[in-house]
Length: 159
Image 1 (tube, rainbow, N blue to C red):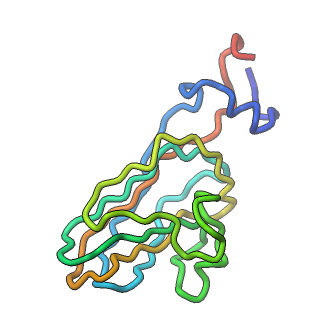
Image 2 (cartoon, helix red, strand yellow):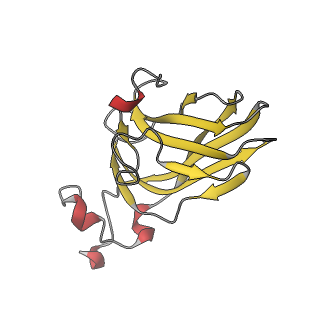
């Protein structure tokens, strides 16, 4: 059955298996010590997609006290001058004036899921910034998002 004309709130009531294949989009962020490192995930995402999970893997820290991360929808790698102008990937996680959404221990692998958030990306990609506070050495970090597209057809018995 064609559900392409259904409103998103009705589509989101469908079972998880209707959303089809999920895939990881991510990037390696080799951070410099104690500075904000900006990134953009090169893989394109659908205009409207479902965010199922976020992975943040931080390794190689020696003296860092904590890791700050923000995810934004942006057309290119953000900069200090423009990052706050881009929409947050996950809304309502922090105050609008704050730069970072997520605060983690310095060495961790964190999954921020399971979640089931509809994201209207338009022509944007997933980007953001990561900073390991008080770190003295360069570190290795990976950020990734598990996404799927919105279904356009489902079996008739779900209608």
